[in-house]
Length: 281
Image 1 (cartoon, rainbow, N blue to C red):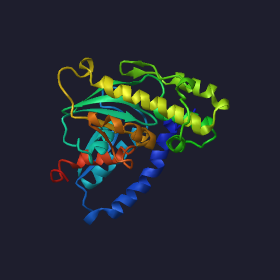
Image 2: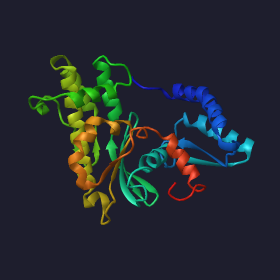
Image 3: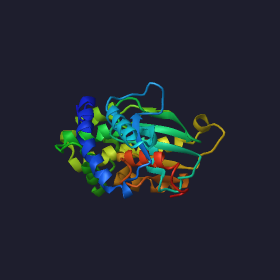
Image 4: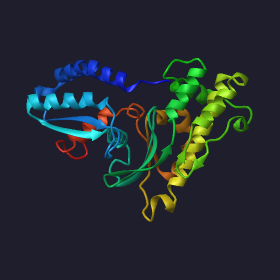
């Protein structure tokens, strides 16, 4: 198993948050804080819960009590959307498809005037987990997605590799990724790291293109149009995927800034501060 268990994540948060908060207070202009915000749950849904969010919430509670300021809670998912959309031309859009592809999440969502609904996504592992697991099999340290992205991006194919690696089977906007993980492991010894990385990203890109086109059907969106697509999360920062989606410009695809693609905290700060800041800051 790759990644961080919940108890380890909670421990890391408890250990590191005081250090980060000390730095934040040192840099606060005039020492004036009027609002604090925190992630409280994975998604804005009843029953959505992960223990690691308790650390940030309790720090938020303590700060708000000590300095007598407002406090606000948002979901991790809302934070990702807020940071991802902030510096794109979809910032003021009312209705967009938001694809969040990361190490922990592979979801396609509809943002509709403040409401976030799940349209589809992976039913088992995430794109990030798939990439990290194959990178680990290739001998790269965790997290290894960025490493094999570079290999895939730089690789110049001299033949068609599609028949060597099974495609990701779609059922509307839902799919499973464990099948392609198994298939990739089976051909590890017969191809180079560059070839396997390229094939894997080609299949992921193929899946993302199908997601984009399926999202636009009347069965998914109903009678209302969308303003565009927003791709976020660490996997969306992939150079290979961004290059591969250039021919999908007609769908008004926007990528979040790579530095913000995996950053939820900045979005949480935006959400908490928007009511105090001048419009369009």
